Image 1: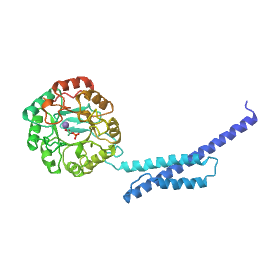
Image 2: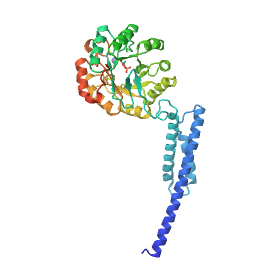
Image 3: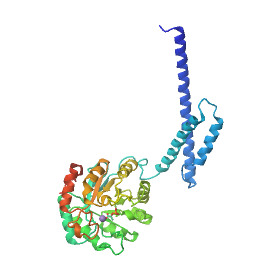
Image 4: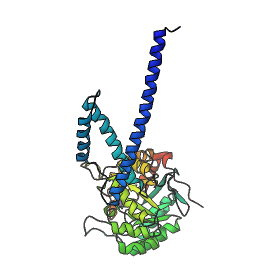
Length: 370
Ligand code: PEP
Ligand code: MN
């Protein structure tokens, strides 16, 4: 039997706890109301074209006011810590409201976008696709051999550049329209889709005529006129991440395409420039995971341009698939040593076979349709 005194104490604690519960409810209602006001400020700022950024002066002003008003028992430092958390959450709310508007965002479309290009499905948990082929289209023999070899390995998407973004204006610039005609014909003959880069707004029509997928190269990721133009084209777009582009810039580049009405965008991480010299670029796996998390678009990884060397392709492809990539892009050439571009990094046919065996069942391409 509890003593009378014990029972009184028990009742008092229960009462106090009930009061705490009520205070919690009131605090929650107040914090939520504060959040709504913050959201209204965000909308007002957007309407005025002002960014919803962290404003240290405004935070400082609020903290000073709270310091003056603090009645205790909490020390001012504690009150400040609590309010700083509230400020941080409010800022995150403003930022997420900003992002909510983006067409690429999962907040706008929660389910994965799955592309179905003539029966080749990309994204949404389908088996990872392989996009393979030479860096540049160089000759009929080269394309014919490569396409036939890759067809035998079940590769459904053939790549090859007809317009090449070369560092030197004196380097091989690609075969142009002749390359488009060749690439498109050879791909078709081998039951493959043809993906090739378009570098100039003036070429979007002709490239769309021959290619099944338009590639925007890393160097053109910031070419907003080109992004808008392919946004108006009736072809899926493979959008490479810029050499030094942040993830946000990359996603905004995709937004340019979607904003023009083209929802068929495949994001392609191809390594970014860092101080590292042992690889051509640094493959950013966080970008793959984040792009999958933040957007509904398929994301593929170009292991060849990321590494710039052949000996890292297997572990990089495995890692890419482990973080959720929907496909792998790899350069394959019948004779890399004599290739007119990227001859350090392309795989020959034996190299591709080893690559496939090394990555194993993770990368099993679907069988070629009869
Ligand atoms: C390419 O795919 O051949 C190419 C030039 O790639 P990137 O734009 O990623 O450098
Ligand atoms: Mn290349």
